[in-house]
Image: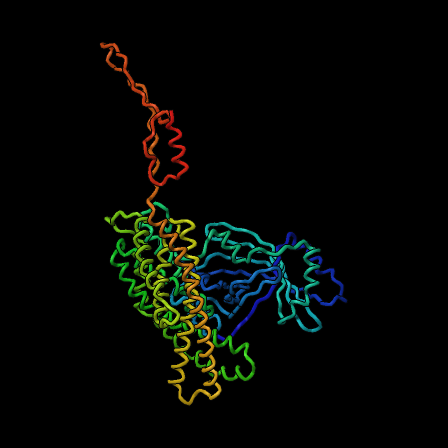
Length: 580
């Protein structure tokens, strides 16, 4: 997708648009820029998205603008906001929404990838009366000033009004020349930087909250049942998985696919951890998630490798950059092929069934008759078992251990990490510290694995492309593999220290896990009440003897042994208290 368009503009809230209009009309003709008023116009913008927010989750907004009888459809990227102008990607085509989706344009191709057959629906409408001014430097229009009075109309009758001044760059790179002008108009007209876009303001007025799909309750409590925690955890991860679908298909942000892959891993881990309390229909999705993860992994590995090789090329000298260029081309070809295969998988019936099953089972909730297992008990069993396996493998590793053993430990570490994450709220700082040290070790082992898979791909290229790679590229491949080997040795040297941190922090967590649960506080004694009078008038009421049990106090003899877990100081106080 080589077509790009960037919208760069200042956005200000204006207390009085008439004052801004008067100030613009009073600017002298000998100023550095000339100003030309344009005829006012009325425009009506309708924003669209799908019920599961596919456009928003792919970091875009979708708008259809009507001016008189003409329509145009625009995709706007997520804005970057700071102290200066707002910058974002923008793509526009003439015509309404149905035609825009079908056309092979910058807008149509993106919408086809994001929507994948899902129909967008209107969210709210923004009606604007716009007075525009062109800013010229000589004969060249470098910017446009828009004075907008906007009414936001949401379904249900809610509405709101915005008054905005927008100064948009027209000639690329020219907005910086307007800094002094922008400062003057802000000061003279009392303008303040707009905190939100019109789209964000419309969401607030309409009471809409975009985000992840709703698959049911996701609240977690320290005293919950294992099955309730299982559904809460899996719903969260499944929602993250589905929310990244549109961005992954679009392919413009590699982090979207990475997040979807991580959500897939966590989903599979949660299904494995909670398998004793989950229905068969949900457990059957584990194999399907593993199948889909293979397609995600193929693209993700190439994302990482391509970024690595292209990054080396971009900072290399002329000779090295020239040698790396054919290598980058080969990685790009393989990446395009892997993405094509991923999109075919996402368009298939098997993937559709996986998504439908997740939605159906998670919305239905836990089945009746599930064993009443407390989350804390389940956490002890799972984390201690997985840590024993991890610890045994970690202690067995040496600097000269084969790479496959480091990779196996990385997999065990992931499973242990996810297990602790699912229950971390139960174990306070001990759980958080254990996770921090385990993540540090995982980062090292992850880099080691990335280097190994990159080297494997480089070897395959040399084997599969005989005669296609230039001699200087082959030499560069050898140098890269030497660098990777040097870095790998450095990681292995760092491993014992990172391992020691994990063993230390998980040793503390083990003590917390094995400690008995605190006993619940004794219930308060019920207050004694006077006896009910005998309703019979024939018999005189007799006095009732009430035995009052005094509350426990220091006068009541204490047991001889104060109990386990007491300190030496408590023993001293105990025996001193028994002296006559």
